[in-house]
Image (cartoon, rainbow, N blue to C red):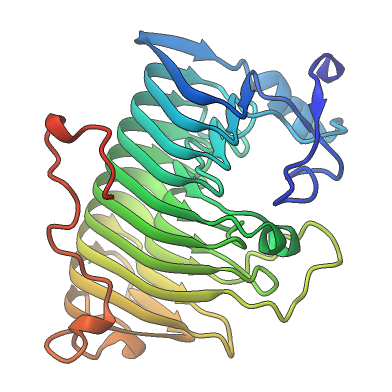
Length: 352
């Protein structure tokens, strides 16, 4: 019975439960205002037994938002490692309002048709390192968030300084790495490298909408391999779920300085579906050294974006055709050698 699970207050940056008005069910593993937290094991397994929650969700019999499997709030110095997480009722690992978080050597599994079973969702958190993980779920493998519409704008805690490296996985309905759609507090300084996604809907997605406000800037994604992915890169600017009727439709997100470098793909349906917002173009979008084997005749579909490209195949869309070199190098978020090396000696290290 879902009533056996305690109900906690909604997050202040969301204003309500993510699925339903009011509170939300407390996660199986839950903590707040903690320091130096370690959740680890010798590849032990934590099973959320989420199928009953998925059935309640599908039958619309829940009164509150489903619980996560792991949620830590307002905590510092968090390490989650060497574990397998199965069948989360909702998002699997959700650090929110946290600092100095490491998630490493973790496997996350849920059926490909399980609803909203995101893998790891850093939310209004900073100095986060996610590495050496395998994720196969029913939604986004990684989703970086920072609050929802007017509540996220008011709370104003961004997600920043986030490293994602050596990530492998697939899904059916989500993406490999997502930013948003709840990004109203801002997202910046995200670095992802050595990524392998296969048999998935989308490789990398940015989700936003009118009314979100906030910003997404200084994003650097490199060394990505995609196999059997429907859409390699997707900017969805019409992700128009809102917490209530009080959001401001004139609050527009600022999207700028996003770079994709060294991306290869095989059996890709669409190279890029890049849609900004009319009157609010996404700026300084840069594509460098990208080679995709695309199966459709129209590999790129772009509107309301501005940027540059070099060494892209198939040839990119008109708004991005101007060359990066030499004139626009400084306009792109290009950081060669910025990430630490990928060796084990740097496991769990941040940029700063």
